[in-house]
Length: 422
Image (cartoon, rainbow, N blue to C red; front, side, top):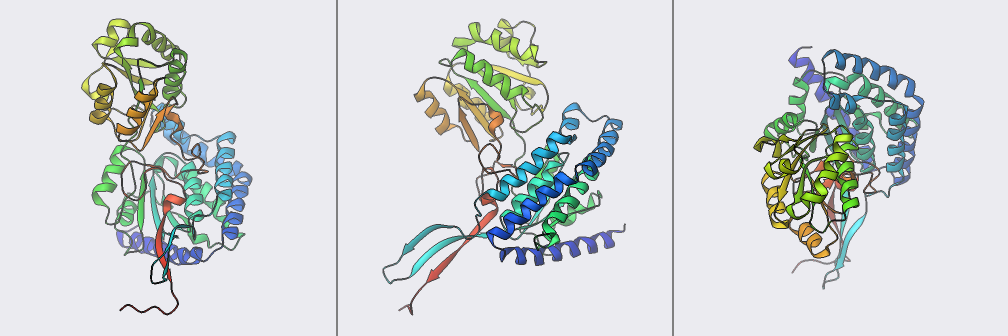
C-alpha cells in the first residue's frame, strides 16, 4: 500500500470514528450495557475462530524466537478467552460514568453549577503482544462513550482482528455504530505515524501499551495528548517489622505469579535487621519456583549462590523470572532507592508497624502504593473497574489503573432563571 493510500484509509477510519463518537455520546447507559453484553457473548461464540487465529500468531512468534515472557503475553486459550469475555461483561455492569455529577453548588446569585462527566471523544490505542487489550480497550472506551481506533502489534495481528470482528458483531446487535471500535488491519509502521499525527484533529487522546521503545516513541512524536507509562519497575520492601510468613508469600506472589505483567515485582528491598533470618527463606522460595536472583554484596553474603547485581539491574524491568535484591538500612533508604530507580508504577511495603507503613504510603511517589499486599494487584479488574486500558504513571488527567471513569472529561452545566451579569 502506498503512503498516500494508507493515509487516505486512516483518515476514513478517523472520520467514521468521529461520527460514531457523536452517536455514542447520545446513547443511554442501558444501550451501552446491552451492547457490551452482546460483545461479550460474541467473543465467547467466536472462541474457535479466535483460537485458530492465535495459533497462527504463536507459530510465527516461535519462528521469530520471541522470549517466553512475550509468548505468554501473546498466548490465548479457552480460559483466557472466557476471562476476556467476563471482563467485558464486568465493564458492562459498571455504573455509567457519563452524565455523572461529581460536584454541584449554588452561587449567591442563584446560579446552579454542576460539574458533569463527558466522553473524551476518539481514542487512539497502540499496543503490542497482548490480544486481550483489544476487548478491554473496546469495552472501556464504549462504556465511557468514546470511539476507539486500535492498532495492535504485528505479533498478535490475527488474534486481535478475530477478537475485534467478534466484538463489533456484538455491538451491532444493539444499534451501536460498528465504527465505535475499529481495528487497523495493517501492520505497516506508518500507521503509527498517522495515529500520532492525530488524523487531522480527529483523535483526542493516544494510549500506548507495550515496551519501552514503543512508549518512548509515542511520547516523543505524538501531536495529541498521551496517557501512558514507560515501564513497570515495581518494588517490594520487606521492613524490619514484617511478619515473616506474610513477607515470604507476598514476595513470591509479587514476582512469580505472572512474571510478564507490568505489576510484577522486579526488585526486593529488605531491611538489614531481618536479612540473616528471612532472606535465606525468601531466596529458597524464589529459587524453588525457578527465579534467578541478583543481589548486592550484603545479600550475596547471606545467599552465596546469588549472582552479583549491577547498577543496571536496579533499572531493569525484567518481565521474566529474575529478581534483583538490595539490602537497605531502614525505610528512608528504601524510599530513596525507589525514588532513584523506580518508574512511579507500583510499590509495596510489608510491615506490621503502622507508622512505617503510613510513612511509606505518603512518601513513595508512585501511581499505586500497597501495604501488606502483592504488587500483582496493580490491575483495574482487581480495583473493581471491571477491566483497564493500562496503568498511567503520569500526574495529569488520570493516574493508576485506567478504567471507564478515567476516560472521561467533564464540562460545567450552569442553570439559571434569567440572571444577567452586572
